[in-house]
Every structure is written in C-alpha cells, then in structure tokens.
Image (cartoon, rainbow, N blue to C red; front, side, top):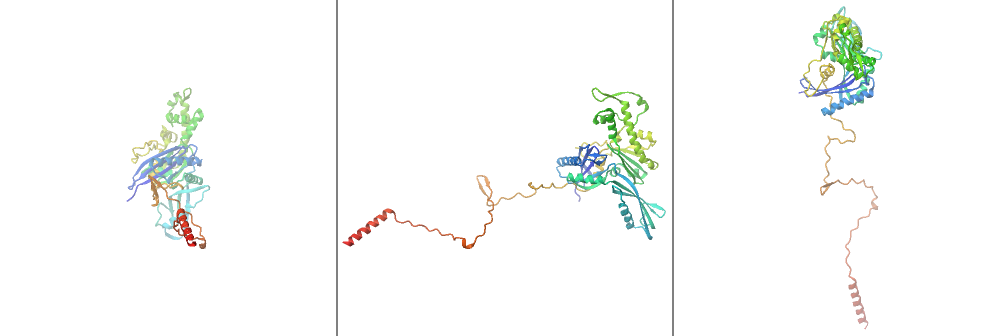
Amino acid sequence: MGVEKNIVVIELGSSSIRAMIGQKKPDGSLQITGFEKESAPDSIHKGVVYNIDKTVQAIATVIKRIEERQKIFVNKVYVGVTGQSLRTIGNTVKRQLDVKVAINEEIMDALKDENRMQPYPNAEILDFVPQEYRVGSHLTMDPVGIMADHIEGYFKNIVARKVLCENLRRCLEGAKLEPFDFFISPLLLSGYLLTDPEKRSGCALVDFGAETTTVVIYEKNILRHLVVIPMGGDNITADIAAIFHIEREEAELLKRTHGSAYTEETENAETTTLNISNDRQIDKKRLLDIIESRQQEILENVWEQVKNYSDRLLSGVIFTGGGANMRQLETAFFKYHHFDKVKTRLMPAVTEFTTNLRLDTQSNTLATLIAMLRRGDEECTSERPIEPGLFDPSREEPTIPTSTIKEEGVVMQPKPEQPEEVPVIEDQIEEPKEEKKKEKGPGAFSRMSKWFKDLATDLVEEK
C-alpha cells in the first residue's frame, strides 16, 4: 500500500522565482496544496541565473513560506531548466558491423552511448531524442531484429550552456536544497498541454514568456525541434517605457490594458489620447504602433523556426504562456505569414486544486509548475535537522537521579561529580584513631578533702 508524497517544484522565471507543492496520492492523483512567488527582476536574465546571491535569497524565501504554511521541512526539490541557450542539435552516429547480424539492444545502446559522448564547445547534453534509424536503404524507428551490417542513428540532442545547470546547482546548494532532478521545462509543458493526436499529426507549441519565447515542434509523436528565442513580452514593455519616458510599471499596465498585436487601418485612423498621470497624456495610435512593431518582430522569429515544418504541422501552431494573452495575436500571425492553422491554448481545467488556493489558471503561467508536479514522484520533505547546540526534542527528557533532594517544593540538583582522587603512597596514610571517652576526674573540692585527710593521718603516726 502506497503513501502520500509531498512533491516540491521550483521554476526560475525572468521576473520571479515560483515554487509549488502538491501531495501525490497512492493512486497517482495530485492535490496542489501550496504556491509561493517572489519577485526577482535582477536575478534571472532570459532564463539564466544572472545574480547567484539574489537568486539564492529568492529561492530560500519561497521555500521558507511553504514550510511555514504547510508546517513541514523541505530538503529536496525538482527544478525546471530553460533559458536562451537551450536548443536541439542534430547528430548522426554510424556503425559498421563485421558481418550481417540481427540488430540487437546491445548495438542500439552502443549507438546511444556514442551519441551521448558527442562534444559541444561550452555546452552539455541534457537529454537526447532518437529521430529514426537507417538500416540498409530503409528508415525505421525500431531497427531491433533487422538483419544488417551497417546502421545509422539520427538523434536530436538537447543542449545548453554548461554554466546554466552549474549555476542552478550552486543556487540550490546556497539555499540548502538538494535537487532530485532537473526537468527540461519546455518538454514537460508540451506533454501537459498537447494531446497525442496533435503530436502525431504535427504541431508547434509557442510559449510566450517575459524575456524568452520557446518553440517546440513535434511530428509523428517525436520531438523534432526546440529553441529558446531571447525575446518576450518584457521587450514590448521596455519599448513603451523608453519612448514615453515612464516607469516600467506604467508601461506594463498600458500594454495589458490597451495592447493589441494587430489593428486594422480603420482603427489606426482614430486618434485618441490616453491619460498616464494627472498632467500627462500619450497618443494611443503611437502606443499601438510600438506594441505591434515589437510583437511583429517576435512573431517573425517564431516563423523562422516553424516555416521549414509548416507543411507537416497538420495540427497547426499553438500559442501559450503569459504573452499569449495579447489581443489579436492569432490574427497577426495569419496576416504576417498567411498560416491559418493557429490557436491559443489555455491551461487545461485542473481538478486537483484545493479550494483554499487562489491560483490564476487563465494566464497559462502555472502550467509548467503543474507539469513538473505531475512528473515528480519522490518525497521532498523530511524531519527538520537539529542544529548543533540546540535542544533536540526527539530525545527523551533527562531523568532526575534518585539522590536529588526535594525541599519545600524546590528540586535541588545533585552535586557535581568529584574529580578523581590523586593516588598517595600507602605508608603516608595515617590510620584513623579511635576516639576514647575521657573519664571525668575528681573535682577540686574532693582533691582538697583527700589532701587534708592524708595530712592528718601522717601527724597522728608521728606522735
């Protein structure tokens, strides 16, 4: 019979560090019990740890809040990996056999091991996905059992800069946490939001984030392409703030309130002004032009990644993430690139949410955390360790020795142990003398009477 497990996951976003905890039941169901968020604008840049000290502090803060609210101690976590250096690179491994034999698992493992050892300057392989194998003149996904003397394996290696995971490990160590595993966030998100029919027929998932936009492409249920574009919604906000000389918070509000990825010419013809403070106004048309220009640039970069697969994406392009809430985003993609199979995917309805949590399930910003919770399967909490010098409540209370004296309700502690006696030479020890009772002698009066008696006797005798 299984037991409930507390799963804790962390996502390091460009603008905030977020953590979520859920209880995984023995039957595999999941109940989300906590969510914490800490703003960290100067900690992560484009998905990569920029300031280790601030990141450590933000991680420790969200974990401490979870511990205090859940009355637990967290010592291990699952962490999502993303960032602008994350991408796929194709690799081919060939093997010439001495004689024609049936391809077996040992040969397949040798191909995969050789692929895993492929060196990349300043990058490391986080995972890899076999694409297909060429056996003779045939392409197949499962070559085991086929007779051949030559085989080629085609792989997509998921790589990232070495410093990406190194800095993540340093941050977790600084926060006194142990990583159970590093999840590749875009793959988990794809598994959560996309259906198997969509991945089989071909689709592209485009996740619009704050500082990055991730494109993941599937065909025949296999990952074909992954790339992180270093542009996102914050670029639009920065443009508005710089051009109108306003604070980023004001710029973000204008973007969310009035922003649109595409406007018709008739709408642009209308000139209106927007109040941004008591004595300042801006031109709405100019605001929309700024937003559209940057949004078009982001969509152009997305299309560059998608266009080589466009005729194979029968399920189309699917937008998600916080930036997918921009109005007219689907219309803009169609107008610019004449690709009509595009839609926006909201986060699926989740029945595991506890009723006392208020989570924004419509902005698509929590999907990655939930996907990680679903994948995690190890207990992330333990008994809180006792710091040196502090009383350990798990130990038994010390018992009071029977020699303790109790007087008038006050417990008198036993005397401390006497130091060891210094050994002495035996003949130096004086034997204890027995005390003799002193006999009382005659008093002074008795002694005088006796003296007179003796004197009288002596005088009689002389006569």
